Image: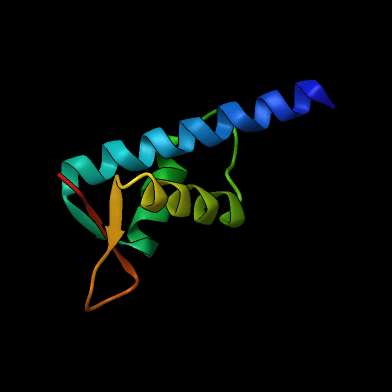
Length: 79
C-alpha cells in the first residue's frame, strides 16, 4: 500500500510539472488541447482524466495557473 501511494504521488507531481511546463510555454490553452499535449508528453504511464483534473485543481490552489474569466475551459499560466 505504501509503495502504491508513493508511486501515485510521484505521478501526480510529474503531471503537475508537465502542465506547468506546457502552460509556461503556451501562456494559455484550452483543456482539450492541454489534455492531448499531456497524453503525448507522459511516456511512463497513462494519466486518468481524474488525475489530470486533480492536478489542475492543485495548481490553481498553488497559484500557478488560473481559469480564464471568460472561458472556464481555458487555463492561463500565472506569471
